[in-house]
Length: 441
Picture 1 (cartoon, rainbow, N blue to C red):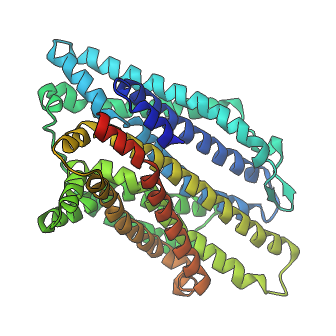
Picture 2: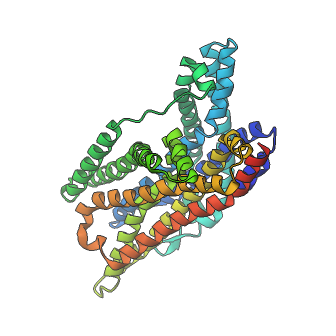
Picture 3: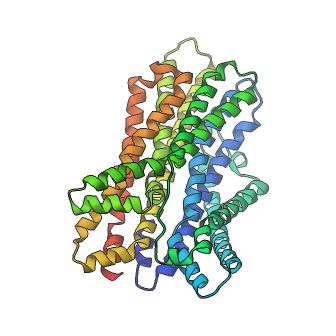
């Protein structure tokens, strides 16, 4: 659907409309998914019996695994079509507009788009509520009252989305205010330092240490805090180190490229490693989550045959299976939305390049092959790397035995394959948009 909307907007003269519609769509998706996740988890915190803590612990894990990637997707939404916005604002600077005027216009535009998308996302959340209320936990459906969020939470989420957009706009304005001519002529070269890798390695080591001392934590709140810090911190640094890693790989591929499509793909990644990362970051988060899903399914399978298990424990493990399924579904919804929005935006942002290549005689299949390679090559690396990082963080808690259980490996492989398949389908779905951009400009 996103690709179809972008295709219709790719007509001559429709670039400005596309610049508006894609960010609004992305913010609406982020808001809907975020409110759905929060609404589904809030019921767990109303329980106060002996086994309630286990459910709350699982809710924290699910929230971290979904909310952190959703925040990343929200940041990507705030940067959609940023190049065109930078071009317009840089032109204003060259015409004499003051930095304060440029800053105010950029922040206002991003905030208004975010608010429009967030309001649409709230409507989408209420449309999902009836289905979410039917999800069973502890033998009963959650119910409408259990999944409908209060007005302060909804308003806070909408406000948070707007603030995220405003902050992203301010950060993106630095190069426009400092050097409008460089932005207008596209002379900004991305700079990514090896310091990113050092920070990521340090966070993974700290997360490993937190998981190692989890069993001797003094209280339930400390356990929840350690889990949230370990999982959330590791997921966050994936976004930090990901662009740096794929830039290194692209540099090597550019030096060894033997075909036009390979060279164009490598140069596309090197043009903006952060943009290339946003194309695959959703699957990187899903790969991270796949390890937890695999371990959870293996654990449920190993304990299902225990004849001495009481009814409450049996219900808990059945609910773990339900929670894993919901988390996987939510993760794939996030990936599908991220892929559709980012791939459509990527084509629209490079429409001038594709039009120029078409005029120079480059076949469409070569452009499409380069586009596919620019996405799939980093994708394979990030999917495998994220799964390995997740396994390292989980190792102190689960040991090697659960990680190498056949069922766990099957689930991990299936989730990885499905995530890569979603991206591949997104590439196929947006090919008509590429053709339109190349032939009509």
